[in-house]
Amino acid sequence: MDDFSLILLLILATLIQVLIVVAYVFTVIYLKVYEHSNRDVEKSELPFISIIIVAHDDLEMLAKNLPHFFALDYPDYEVVLVNDRSTDGTQEWLNTLALKHDKLTIVSVSKDVENPGKKTAIVRGIACAKSNFLVFSDADCYPASNDLLLNFGKSFSKGYELILGFGLFESTDKFSNILYRIESVKIALRYSLAAIIGRPYMGVGRSMGYTKSLFTKVSGFTSHSHIKSGDDDLFVQSIPRGTKTKVVPQALTISETPSGFMSWFLQKQRHLSTGKLYRFHTILVLGLIELSELLSIIGVFTLFLVRIDSQWFVLFSLILLRLGLLAVLISTFNSLIHYRSVKLKEIWLELFLSILNPLFSVASQLRQSEEWIRRK
Image 1 (cartoon, rainbow, N blue to C red):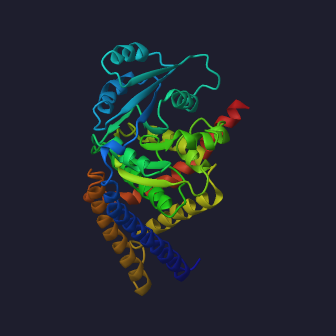
Image 2: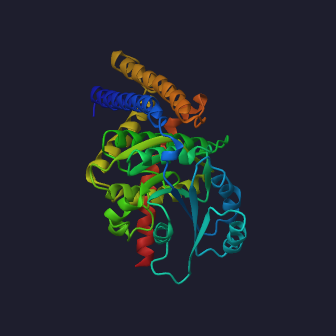
């Protein structure tokens, strides 16, 4: 490929990235405008809600986070805690906690259960939930505010069957933490935009709601029961077109990030294993987005290696424009969710994500191949 063809390819990729960031900006503006649409719902109209949380040997995290779920500003709800085969004293701790909180319903999954795993535990929790309106979270996160359930309840009262909240992360100065936080914002914006245009493809199990009747309509997790993970994104993949869906960014939970790059890689590997089952057009679009990101970053580095002429100046201008739009995006996003997800000075580190994500994907495939060979 000659220099002219290369620069045209890099310009095209960077232009696509500029347009994507513009789309994200309009997504945030849309969500900000429509956040007021829930404010006209009276508390008397809010439905009874069941929060379902699955825990497997998570006693330390439960002790830290579960009390926040009992302090939510909501008229009537229950917390269904599914103890999934824990051996760390979780059951005894929950039994004591139940004496203090009448909102707590404990569901225990025995060690000899058929098809053990989180999906089975969630199904048990749903079966025991008293409400048709279900909200899901995890033991390793806590609500960003006491209004978590209000955001879900007001949307349920307006007839929405699937409600997508956000799950973001606590801030530290660790390099992996910064990258993880940036990626979580990008993921949230992607699935928000998809849901707004009527093409929802995922949500996060740390903050997500749907009706029990919708779960029954799609036969629960049956279509992807052979995959251990995917209780959130693959469930969204299984819902029928036209399902009334709403994105509620203020339904926000906060978690700690993985401790390092290896933990991050293992988590990414689990996510990639479910991504293979996405609809073809979703895989194609997500693949093109990541490819354009990578090519755009290649464009950044080539600027330091070649002479500057008119074509390279166009590329340089587009890169600066994208960076400026990202600053606007992050500032507006933080204002929308009332939480400082990413600092403006950290935005430029996003370029490392565009390099790491393809490497994670390749490493994940190689690791799976090695495991397959060992199992065989």
